[in-house]
Image (cartoon, rainbow, N blue to C red; front, side, top):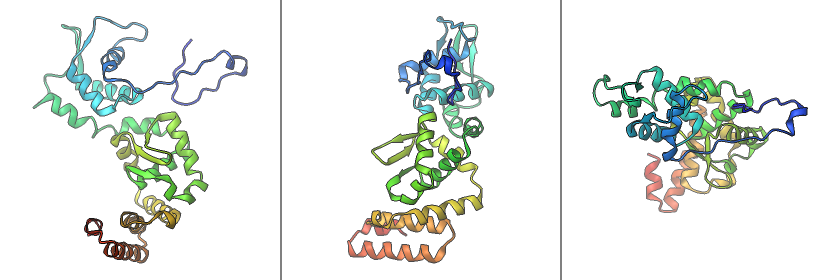
Length: 261
């Protein structure tokens, strides 16, 4: 018996010792065609003679980077939109030939841009604290170093972030405390649900949490100032931008100074 779940299952104690958790790892590009084919077949009835066009597999892999759950969402979305379909005469999954213009270009253009509903359908099931951690991570940017935000650790942000990573694999861990959003589409979906007042509050929390000891260069000062600015704390933002400019001048950091303009 195999049960599929995105969240941890509530298994009776009498059965727990007989269960074996199976985690899905990132797929290789060579696995993509088999996975797409399985999504077009009835459960337990895989048609091994069905083929998948290389263009379909390449475009979807390019969008999902091999994440199985994300791939599932993308394929079902594209099927509902009739962008990809099963050509029954050839028993082959293809891009819909009736699409106007370049079908491959349209598939590449549409996939990352119109997936918010698909992604949020999954993310909306997250516990409140984990969703809050995603919103904070979104305001930190597409890449961030957690050690700069000491106070956020004590708000439970770090633990919630690790929980989301374990359950959904949304982030790539670059090093010990350096994280990067794995898919820009997920970043944009989360960004789309942060309302303006909430965004101001989150950036204020981030600015207050910044550890001054880790801000030792122009880019760090500018990041500090940006969060104050987004929190509409203009006086503090101005002061931090001025400090970044003085530091660039002292260090002859012309490039860093130019980026402040």
